[in-house]
Image (cartoon, each protein chain N blue to C red):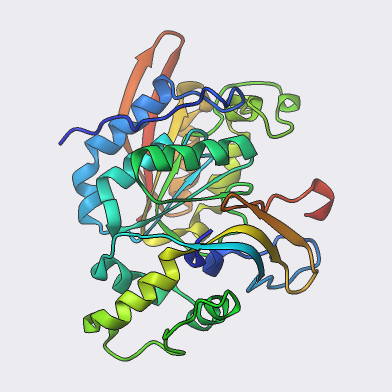
Length: 124
Length: 206
């Protein structure tokens, strides 16, 4: 699971949960993979990202490095920043661990990089 | 430009739907629409019910590092098979086990869905195994209708949803219903194979 995916995942569908976002990450195995950098794509992606959630997720995994707390102005032309965003969004991967719903405490296991968000019928 | 079927190996995955005529038709639809797909510059793509993962891998081969590729399946073996397909084709696929796109809060620029379209008893829609890859319930539309009812919320304003349908799914009625909701519906490709007349349609917000 990349932090990009974490940025999009919610547990809102759990019965009684209102927002279910962001999910807490408890990681037991985190890896950094090499992914092709495409500055145009990252520029298009950033407006769709909840940046503070990305920052906090990277920080909780010990991979925040020099990621800025806020997106700089005119980031489209700031390749240095786009590379940092690229790394946090696409290269840091949680291989094993769990996601935790911030409201219900429901845990969703992550195995081999695949989060299991499927609920039992009585939880929906 | 021709689009090759991505590599896959389902030897260890008897419970995952093996790419078949419908899958190949879907890949041909993506090939036919490739220019439009590239020109629309999608950022977020998602395949629902990815199975072996070859459809989203085919899309990733078109768009490469210009887009990100989410995929979902309720079958845990399909999720693992898809990550294997991703590795074999060297494409970055982000697979999560879930129902449809229930746990993803973003709106997608491209959605691919080759649903369980076969007409079956509603009772055949149970569990998370291979039966769920084809059992579509009455009219073969149980899962498709759940997606279409929600499409407005999960598709971006300029987004396109590619959907495979069977003649018996009553495509006319789907077109009418989605037209009323403000969707534009266009046939991309159709093919008759023994026993089935298959279509790939694309849905966009008009």
